[in-house]
Amino acid sequence: NKEQAFIYALTKDLPTFVYEFLKLGIDPSEIFFPNDEFFTGRVRYKTFIQSLYKNEAVNSSTTHLSWFIESDSDLTETHIHTIDDLNTVLSKLIGDYMNKLYFNNEKYENRYRSLWGLDELNTEQNQMNVQIIGSQENLIDKDNRQISQDYIMRDLFLWSILMNHIDMAKVLLCYVKYRICAALIATKILKEYYSIATHGELKDSYMKNANYFQQYAIDCITQCEKNNSDQACQIVLQRIELYGNVTCLQVASDAKDKLFIATSCCVQAMNNIWYDKIYPEQSRKRNGISMAIGFFSLGLLAPFVVNYRSGAGVRIYCYLNLYIGIFTEKII
Image (tube, rainbow, N blue to C red):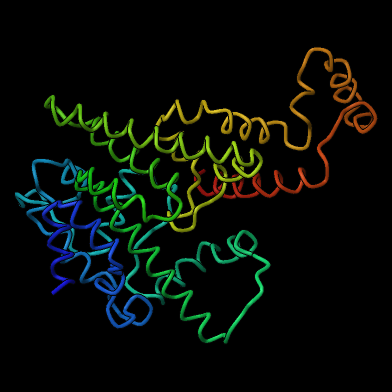
């Protein structure tokens, strides 16, 4: 059947077939989360892990995934059998600043989100003035389908990177939400593989592919900046809930993606954080006197000699700084 054929194409690293399946409208969420198991099931990732994280694949010589899996010294092979195994691997590869991505069911996910206060933090970010058309029940069903689709495409993309199926990852990236963040996460994982690889060809391929995904992220953010530079700055600083509430700039910094960080968009975003409500132009020498007056007067004369951002700009950057401050406190 088509479900088994799709899984076969994934496990045998056949990106062309996977692309054709997706183009024909195959929904991976219906394969890995049948009967709405993503929201109602007790072990939502059982089929996903059993199908794609088999011992043979995890311990393959074409990937260094097994090097990042904790195992007993008595075992000759490592394994990923549970979501805890998967969360631990991603924490090692990406960093503990990323929240858990995988949960057995909705109950445990909601409990985790409540424990870390993630629901409250994401409420303001996700607020949208949308006119609701149709019944509330149909709207909820549509939202649930979209959520499960977003999750499974994310999971398949991360799986393809972990397994070093790069051509497969390139296909899946076209269907992934928040592609810039996904591409940067790919560079982080591949650079971690590169750091421990010892033999030449595979080691070189890790860095080559990491550079490919970094350039992909650069091309995307550059195009965003051409359309709207302010929104592009928000993109690199926005916490991505789908990827454990990390930001693009956070991942790029940790992965040492210098070319991405050097883009004018990222530079502007970091300047906006540094100067906060003050215009960055105030740092110029000709404005040095006014800045000095504002400083030595303990801010009393600053409103008269220092130029500040407009109200809209202040709200935007205070909003972004709030997110950065929250997760800086968590890391510390």
